[in-house]
Length: 143
Image (cartoon, rainbow, N blue to C red; front, side, top):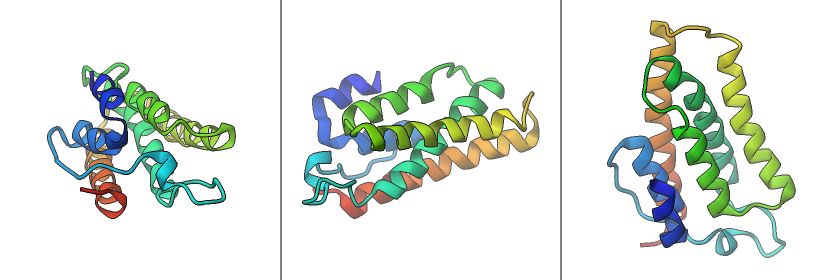
């Protein structure tokens, strides 16, 4: 499972998430969450991107199984692993989980069965999530 590797490698959380999203894409790792946070203890500079990625994971958690992918809990597990690695504070944790739930709920309200539009949305989210993960890692990572 991807998050067993995440626990061993800690600072490379988004690298491995990018691998999961892109099924093999390689990107540099991120610094540890604590190192990336500001001196006032705020969110890391990639927080907005991380919230977007959380929303994408929520959408994938709904759409992929709806369209027959054998990934019943994969995207929720990916989100749980991301939360575990980031170890966010209460408010920040709530925002990340809220973004995931928003991604899930927004598609649950629209799609009851897999349609060509749902398949297209799923494919685009896989691509966007992989690109976003790579971009975060490239921008804030260290080699």
